[in-house]
Image 1 (tube, chains in turn red, yellow):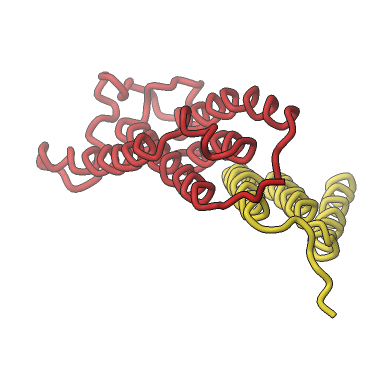
Image 2 (image 1 turned 180 degrees about the vertical axis):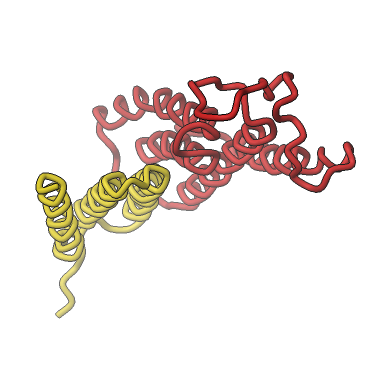
Length: 155
Length: 85
């Protein structure tokens, strides 16, 4: 079953917007609904659009198994290292030692509702980014392996 | 309040209709698309019940990735269900 030109063009147009919206959900995970898993799933939906619209030979220029494997491993390592980094400070695993320090992701905030300041939350945005990269790699590679094993009949 | 109940009744009726469509269609591609519509209506219902977090997950996984997996499976096999006599 070969997809029409309409489907292919629509997938090409929607792919960057899916990635951008997924990145938005990931980066605002500590402020708004959503987070690492949901944003990663939205990004993987963009990859799924490309994979569904084309054959495996057409897709290997944009999505490679090796790159997605590296994505998955990098996300897990980022999550684990962010969790372990508290141990260096003498704090327990997953201790949020970056928050309220005035530094990179720990802007000092008053108690109460956040007016939209992104650089708060300390360790939580880092964990969200790690989970987002991991879920993008994991879910996309499932679809990529599935389509690479599919024998399409010639019409 | 009444508008809220009417909206929920409409969404639930849509859920029932799409669920029946998934079973009834003999064209498997149409059944996959009906399943995606079911997931999208379920995400809308989650959003109405004030769980936007679950709604994003349902829309991404249910309507996006599951449909993609079904379509890839249909591409590898046949599109139409056969009548077994």
